[in-house]
Amino acid sequence: MDLMVAVPIAGLSAIVFAVFLAWRVLKKESGTPRMMEIHEAIKIGAVAFLNRQFKTVSIFAIVLTVVLAFVLDVFAALSFAVGATLSALSGYMGMVIAIYSNVRTAQAARKSLGEALTTAFHGGTVMGMMVTGLGLLSIGIMYYVSGGEPAKIVGVGFGASLIALFARIGGGIYTKAADMGADLVGKVEVGIPEDDPQNPAVIADQVGDNVGDMAGNMPIFI
Image (cartoon, rainbow, N blue to C red; front, side):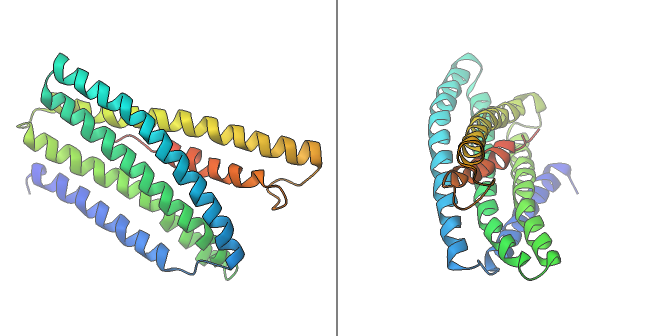
């Protein structure tokens, strides 16, 4: 099979597999009302942070896309925009699925270690497959559209790298600030154990773990 056809097909297959794993995770039991209450608080905080971060980064990305269109050419700007958009999409979807899989993993752990491990593994695999699938699909299609000239699709990698850079820095700063705030105020000043539900700052800590360690660690495509 021609590689120009095989690569997009492989990418599409990875995306389909990621959707299948996400569906399997979402089908699992979500847990007790108290677990769902905590899950909702973490989800609201993580989604709000990511929405704000991508809204800010998108302004910079749009300006840079316009600059590239004038300095280089329209196709270079298009490839940059495609890479940035798909990198953000993969990170966003991966983080949301991770949040949903967290509470389901906790519920599965109440039954057996094996079921909890399977749920966690499937939830984490979704982001990996989405990054791989979207990367292969976008690069394969852009390579075909460019007429088989690799130099013209370098912008895809630059766009993906830009979003990954901002996500890692922004998410890393947030998660460390929340972690230190929760630990210092809770353990040092008040004497509450780490990650204790009596400390409301633990919610911010868990939000930071998702936006920093999950969405913030999104890999680049190439």
